[in-house]
Image 1 (cartoon, rainbow, N blue to C red):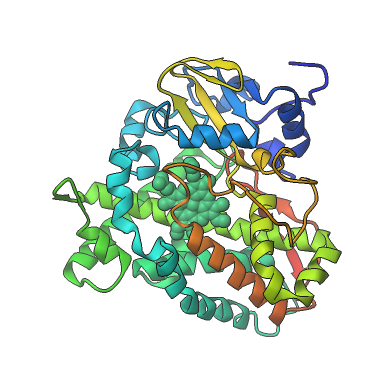
Image 2 (cartoon, rainbow, N blue to C red):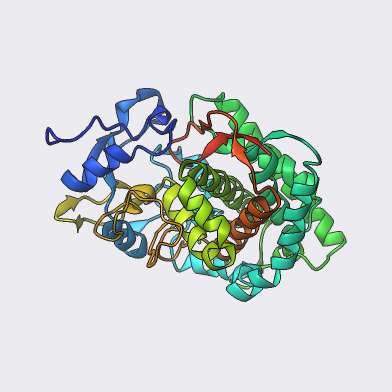
Length: 407
Ligand code: HEM
């Protein structure tokens, strides 16, 4: 490590408790873009790791190249978190396509193309607008609220519930469970995290039984009869697929909306610019918010064979963390990268990843963020921050946890 590097700890959730550690990331990009990061920075989080370090990857070009190179870098081998999961646990989560490699991954991913493809997502726009309007209506004549809990968090849970064909209120309940499953180790008891996953799996089993008996025109009914290699999904595969869909789109989209509004509060000129010209600027503002907030901090890959990244030798079995938030501030790709600019163009951000696992829900997420922002900025034009935002303590998912606002 060179002396110019600030203290680096990307394992402790505390490093992310005030937003992403952009000083640490900038130091890494400039000095050690492929950095051997010790896992034992906070020993209780090493999760029984066999490898006592991981490679922190912070340059945009490297993050993209590794994400695309599934021949060399695997999701299946070690999962997606820097903390290793015991082999029995891995065997279960490998039912989710996020933990598979091509070609197996492709056979599952193509089961759910329609509502996530650009046309399918767009066809759903009117329904998203209706749900967003309902959320603002529900505020009634309240003078204050928590923008994260009362506004940003509602929409993604409603949208995925609606798509899957389950009651909207159940969507809210499952969202609370997602929160627990994504909570950093040490912030809630492990048993509570495990029981949240169990509860969701049991709920999925009920949905499966219900959709088999009363099929309808929704994603869950379609998935129940999803066929891979000539065979329908097993109950276990269905349950994990269900869990992935619920988990992947909830807190990520919420954090983009919450983090995006916080960025607008902190950059009043940019806010004014957007609010005065919302039709023209909303599309670029959504992309800038995705770049700025980068709600998924990293995804892990495990090397299947020896490789070289940015001149550094990687050994088979090594783990690598692809830091999307760091890549999204890379000066080699973004002019004036630490400026928040609602009209930024081009904006080649990598908040949705790259390669075969590129976010399945990106089209839907973009619509949800745009619709919710428009709803907030046009119906609550004088909304202001009413107190300090508190941040999620997680080394994996980033965004404000609470953001008090005057309406
Ligand atoms: C702002 C919101 C979102 C962000 C920032 C985000 C980000 C990501 C990222 C970084 C990945 C991994 C990409 C990779 O490894 O290369 C991913 C995967 C995924 N996302 Fe999203 N996501 C968002 C919203 C959603 C929504 C709304 C849904 C669905 C309703 C969704 C469903 C998924 C699924 C199913 C995967 C796994 C894809 C696969 O393994 O092939 N995401 N997302």
